[in-house]
Length: 213
Image (cartoon, rainbow, N blue to C red; front, top):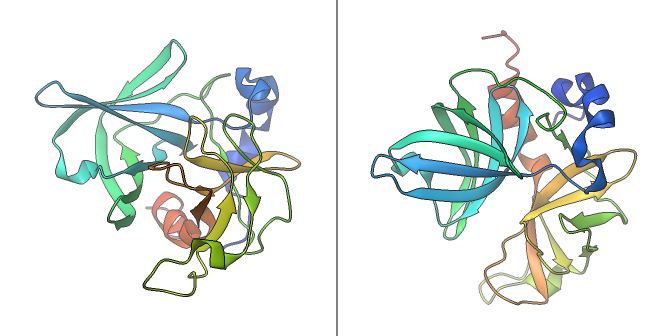
């Protein structure tokens, strides 16, 4: 497991310090996909490198769609790109987490810059929040057991708290870091969170391959 901080996150500290997102907890962008019929679908996502966006969405596999345009938007600002490839990290029933590779680099600025990822295998004892700034608390695994299983796999934790407007959960410490993803399809008190740390090796091999290709 890779435990280092990702390079894009570190190299843009000056942008984060001056960025207009600093009055919020995290930097999720609204991702709009426009298919060949003109239909628009949206989800939350974070930029982790100039050509890579990490997205999470329920029941929507963009690999199965013919996407013509890809927009990263924040408030009234937007950047349009074409998609080169979609790397699926997880897909199961309602859950879909993917790394979208763009066909060209975006230009970093004070509203568009990479998000830091939580790289430790240890769960934070506190400091988890959703995008609206509401606390998310790690609770006993048993609160999230389903009828068919009496345990959670190591890549998941059970949390208590409202989803708010985003399914992204961050750890707020020295700098906000994306900790994982929850799904907001009901009003349940407890929810399963999928930790981003379980995808780090795959992400690193795609975004920063050792051979540089």
